[in-house]
Each structure stands twice: as structure tokens, then as C-alpha cells.
Length: 144
Image (cartoon, rainbow, N blue to C red; front, side, top):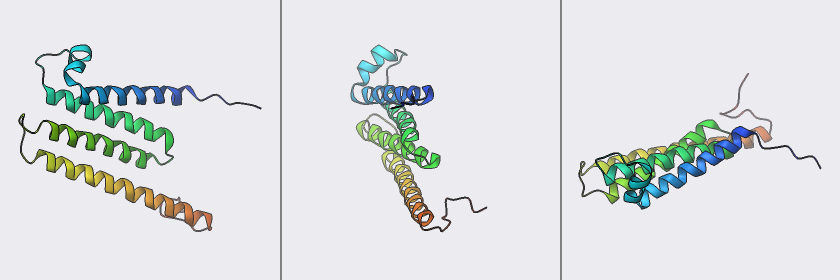
């Protein structure tokens, strides 16, 4: 039985996705530990470290989604949704530390919009695949 090796780019992307997700989770769950160990740039700001974690989660999720989804836009929408949701969590965790009272709500609105766009793209892709299986060109297929 012949085995084809996983291309180095996919292996590398998977490794970086895992590292990004782990670093993001660490920054969100234990910001002072993350600051002391990985990002000792004074002055310490718990909220800034939480935001770094949220964005690392988004980057890792984009890479992970890109590895498992064939639709690039869907992968990016899914990854951005993950990052935006983590950013909402960051603002909820730190809502007494500054910022604007409306920040969690406005950031949640962006996260919701991204989620709706991701679901719409996924549904459109499923419809396109179903139409393709029946020999009908779908909205995500090349019409030429």
C-alpha cells in the first residue's frame, strides 16, 4: 500500500495552528503567566494580554479551518468568527478595567455578523454541491 506524505506546508500549518491556539488559550486563561513568560513588555495590561490571546485564537482557527475546509472564504470567516468571539470574551472578562461600556456589545455584533456570514457561505456551498451532484450549476461554481 502506497502512502503519500503530508506536504510540509500542511504539517507546518497544523503545527502553527496548534501553537497559536495554545498560546491564545494560555493568554486568555492565565494572562499574568503569559506576560511573565512569553511577553514581558511593560507595562503589564491584563486586557491587552487577553486581546493578544483572542487574536492568537483567531489566527490559529484560520489556519486550522484552512486545513480542513476547501472553501477559502469559509475558512477565513470561520477563523475570524473564532477570534471575534474570543475578543468578546476578553472584553466581558475585563469590562471593569476601562474601555467603553458599549465595547462588548459592539464587538459581539461583529462576531455575530461574521458567524452569520460563515453560516450563509456554508449553506451556499452545500446547496452548490447538491446542485452540482444533480448536474446544475450552483452559485459558488464557475458558470463558464
